[in-house]
Length: 309
Image (cartoon, rainbow, N blue to C red):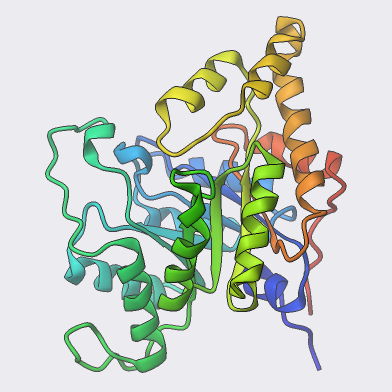
């Protein structure tokens, strides 16, 4: 008899502390960019998200990026947003992912185009993230499209969603995750966590609602490697809450030490998060710094992923 297997599904099924990371596809026709990033992460993460035009900025599509990540030997998670597609295109992309062997999908509403590099673009938002999760589960579990037509054979991907524990009003955030779990989310990746105590309080609400029995919660983390990046996260990225203590710590070291201090803070955050009961793992967002993820994980006390038989 074999174990639950490698990858994200295997890690969650086995109760291992899961580690995922993120790759932003290039803004150019560079086929090797995904492979280069994946090379730094391979062996250290259970799966890697390939973003879907994040913050409404044009990049290579997530589906193509996932295929290239798989070719590079790393399990992909396809992100799919409702911003740019109606329900026909969304269901078609989900079927395309299944046909191409993408084992995981992360479904979200998406940032409005006004925040991106084409602010004049017309948004779609035919469905929202909760409805898209329900759509994917209907396709998978009932073998039907929203139209009622049969999907044969149905897809078999693991269905994920996102949540931001820190968005106001915070008292409703656990209940909002509950809506996504009710729709069928099997794992959830969160926005950046910088305030571990506040995140732990949110997790207690999530546990009290019984959500972790049906959905694995994976906390988002990432290194802040410059004061400019700190300011960008604090003021320009929707939904990110950065406590003043982070800025004070970065400003409290010599300029040449800021990057290292940001990496250390990320590792310390991961180590602290590992102590939170019922947390299933961490999702490391280190845009353009994939080479540093192994150091962050190792400093946090995490080891290389072992391939399950």
